[in-house]
Image 1 (cartoon, helix red, strand yellow):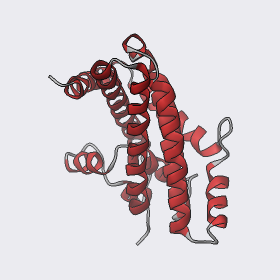
Image 2 (tube, rainbow, N blue to C red):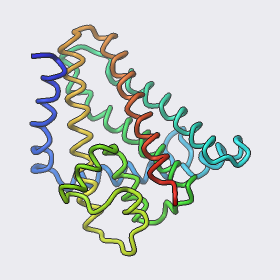
Image 3 (tube, helix red, strand yellow):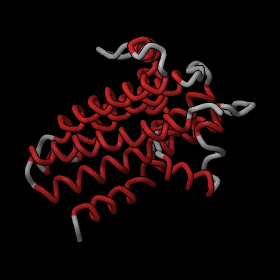
Image 4 (cartoon, rainbow, N blue to C red):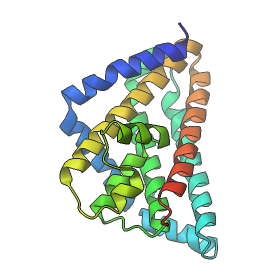
Length: 226
């Protein structure tokens, strides 16, 4: 069995345990990440301030500002991905929470900035639920909607007539579970497959950066109003 295959199996087995053991904790984790991403934390300014600066730098070109936002956050994701993937096999699983926290903050912030640049109100709980849902990625969202686990696409959630708090909790729990599954599976695959600490960091950097770029492209299209 390949390392990537082993990582995938571990990720899938971990997912239901997360949902069963801590649904409220998962919900709270995603909600807190959303708040910090929007209001700012540490050196990161409030997302509206950052997005408006990008728009000003691009002389009002929304698409250009979004491209800048994506490039910036891909760099952020790559940097934290490298740092949290350094270390050998013994530190692999211990690093998972740090990577989830860092990557989630970066990706939520990027998607929120894109939603803002497309004219969505980040104070609207429907828009916040849509931003979180986008973390699942296009393919996962499409499957979840088809199977009835999600009521609509991110844009559908953002523009829905009414807001249902139950939807937010369900979305947050599913997103947290998906994030843990991805990170745990990826981490085990890189460390078992390579057994070389620094190389694991390089692989993590590449994976996080590419995943963030994909989400940026998805959000740029999804949140564009008709």
